[in-house]
Amino acid sequence: MVDFIKLYNFLKQETGRDLNENSPDLKLEKDLGLYGDEAADFLIRFSNEFNVDIQDFDFSKHFNSEIDFISLFLYKIFNKKEKEQLTIQDLKEAIIKHKLNNKWKTHTYQSIGQTE
Image (cartoon, rainbow, N blue to C red; front, side, top):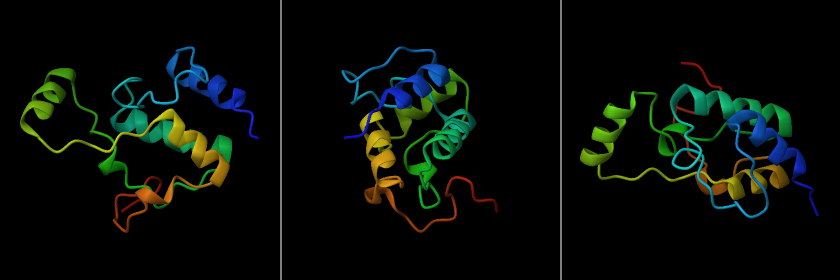
């Protein structure tokens, strides 16, 4: 069994929130406020810290771009397609598998860490 204390310490350092085993369904964007460049930077640090491959992760399917809150509110009203939310449980599974869960594997050019 994997001890996730290191993950919770990492999340506290990154978000300022005390999280524990009772919060596996918290969503990184919706609940922890990570989106845009901040979310991309978070995932790169997460990948490095826990040796998780994120090369095939399609960021645009899971996170909104970094825009102000008013624009984000309007975007959510008019854009009916919901993003697939990444949760703390997903991060735990990625640590175990050393890869972001295969259900997100895509073949697009917008992968984290890939430059155009």
